[in-house]
Length: 268
Image 1 (cartoon, helix red, strand yellow):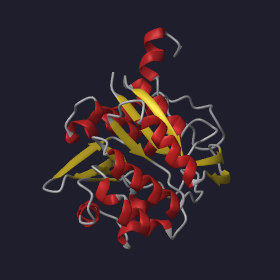
Image 2 (cartoon, rainbow, N blue to C red):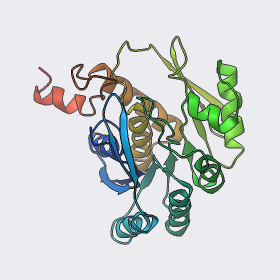
Image 3 (cartoon, one colour):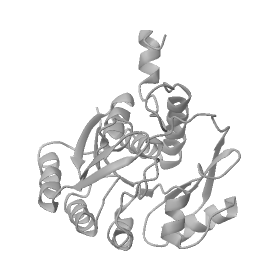
Image 4 (cartoon, one colour):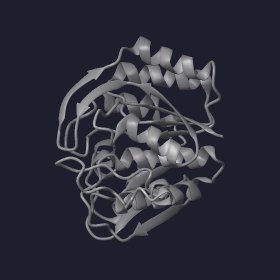
């Protein structure tokens, strides 16, 4: 079995953050481990509060995992401040995991801000060069690039611009645009386009977390990057399609174990 580590904030409502990552790792047949960077009191409707973990604790959590258990891929999510970003970057340079998937989480699905503004530049300088793949959505890509993104051409230009900061590859997620769901992967040499019909659903809480952790799981299992992205997108699409509509009053979570529940007959 392959082993995947998530370094991210928690979500007490269970749909995003570390909780979503661990569910995804398990659903895709990998052993999941976690490093908590921030304790977030949030639900499907709003973010109530954020309490950042100390840099010492973050570093020690990372040490605890790497000194004892092989890590085949790392997914990075919410890193709330510059000090934690620098701590994580230093630990990644020390341990050099095979794959790093970085989801530059800045805003929750409900609209709450999850990263301090001054931390964005630190994220770019410290962690982008260590990432095998970045997975920004449209608002995050706009914040990184400093310009509006409204078309496929804009997404491609943004992917190239972000890749130039040092990341090996960039996946710009187009879920915030209208029409058919469109994602653009730039691997540093070529563009790859992923499209599928948009699902009419409000169960989108944690979809970015789920996608990036799914990509990490597939990379750990030996998939090439393009295939890992394609497989992860298919997984997230079905997790949205099979989501329970009555969880929460806002944007509900996806169904990470839809396949297992169906096998057991628990989806009835």
